[in-house]
Image (cartoon, rainbow, N blue to C red):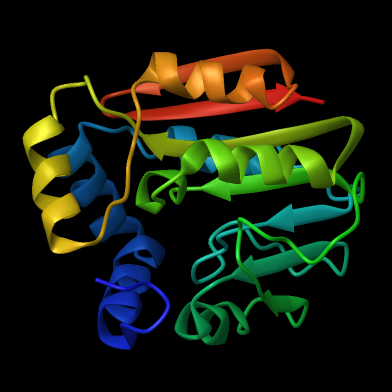
Length: 195
């Protein structure tokens, strides 16, 4: 699946994520994940922070705050996110169109595992973070009992190159981030780190 061009899959994915019942059941069945962790992380956002949210998907973390920039490679996802905000941008996470040290916070929920090079994406997010800024997100990791499903999704083209929790920590460290906090729930790891 190409997230940039596959409108139908992007629409169905977003509908599932936006549905409290479907997302809770799917997260538990597919990833053994307690989705309340995701909701707590989203609720912990600082509304006064200039925030970049990429990939924003259909806008699950968007809070209709003009200081929240929602970005995604998928035009379909951006159209779906428009119902929550008008501060939208189609952008590639590997080449963000922002200067160094622009944002107080960067969010990347449920997207790193879809990328061929998550470490490069984390480096780019760290680049646009201001000193003292926070990177917050979630990603599916290998080595948590769901590797067969991950391989199926890789063959289908939905997943890129998810790493292990150890890989995630080393990617964050290599990007110059500190105060790393990793919280695992099933095959999903939530993370926060500071620049």
